[in-house]
Image (tube, helix red, strand yellow):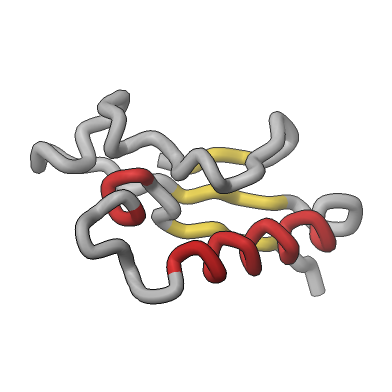
Length: 79
């Protein structure tokens, strides 16, 4: 069986809202720890939602990944 880590919609538009999602800092920390453990053994796919709504327009600041996510060049981004 093949294994991969999927990171879904960890975008600024979702995490920089007011109020912030519950326990956001801890959630991002856990995702970073999982990614660090997965990196040498499994591919990492980062899925970014995009749409016509003003919040998630591709290339907008809200569409970008949360800066606390430690994405690497080896991660595959899927839009």
